[in-house]
Length: 539
Image 1 (cartoon, rainbow, N blue to C red):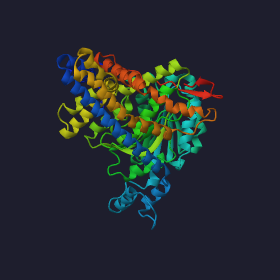
Image 2 (tube, rainbow, N blue to C red):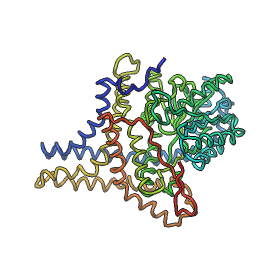
Image 3 (spheres, rainbow, N blue to C red):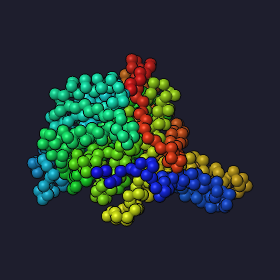
Image 4 (cartoon, rainbow, N blue to C red):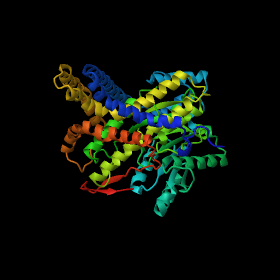
């Protein structure tokens, strides 16, 4: 039987569905036209509209800077916690006298006396699925080693390397070699080949990890392992979990109020190769890291993104991930949300999983790869139509308020992604173009300039955070490289405009005209070799 909440095929999309596919792009272009249209109609109204929009974004920026600082502090605290000890205390149901422990841990131990844990933490099995296509061993091996370096018993960890048949003979040999080499270090180590000719699938990670998930289900059935004991983490080839990630995930899973109807989201940090990346890519990578730190504190808006974990039992009920979208991570939230009729949430794990900033073998390819990556992320606008189909067609038990608020956040987020940088940079100058003698039109750029000057406070915080997030500087770089890590922020307005806005508008325009993305465009990976004088592509 087909899964109920799947994305419809293109030929099955109704006019209503098409309306909601068009809606994000239509609103974005209307927002971009608004300063011009209002300036023609009434310069005062245009000035008020622009000023209100800029003030809203100014307040958001200041709030985000404050939250980034708080999120960074919480992440560092969680990285230093004695997670193994906390798990033992949770399982025993008691904390030694005079031991200093976080309040939430004290509360969890107290609750375990009145409501039993889902299971003892020591019984949790972690399945770690690493998806790969053409990445080389130089990319994959550090990811596997980072899992092994976890402060966790690897005999409770299943390692699965999900590789693509499309990767060819080299990819298959590499997958079999790696899983054989690491087999004794895990509970088990399995290579699963995703066939390249399964009908109805989009080419991408979702189809690959879904096939691996179904094979894992069979594996567990054959060995009599209860799916409730298994938590599945999906990683890209360059993802490196913090040493405390598996412990923190075990804790969150067994202590959660409703552990099955949930996913668990670590903080994605793009710092692995940050010293090697080009300046514009460093700015974007750092901005995305800070955005994820802020998101870890916004529990009402937290969604699946990139590397995340979900109970095997829940994955079985949702028929794993969608095989019809190139944004399977964010889409999984909505897929689970409707499957469980709103009884679903994302729990933050305040520990990082470090990833690569975009880096290809030369500057031109790096620019292209960065745009393609952001185009794939912004293609999450396709979820607007998916959400509307299942939220507003009747028969849903989810409260109307919850549906409407989530729909608004989803839609507004994608529209702001597309238009925010453009309006912030240019809208203040539009009224003066139509009314060069108007006092209001000529004062507006001055007011905007003052607002942006105060907004430099947020940028200063961003630069401070960027320096705090840096891993140790590689020996191949001299001290002046650190200076460039500060000067790079001159690119900030340009990167927001050329990458975020244009990528989002590209995705939304594709949805408007049915130019769908049906293939997962792999972000090219490269590593610096030697003394850093050249790069070697590793894909």
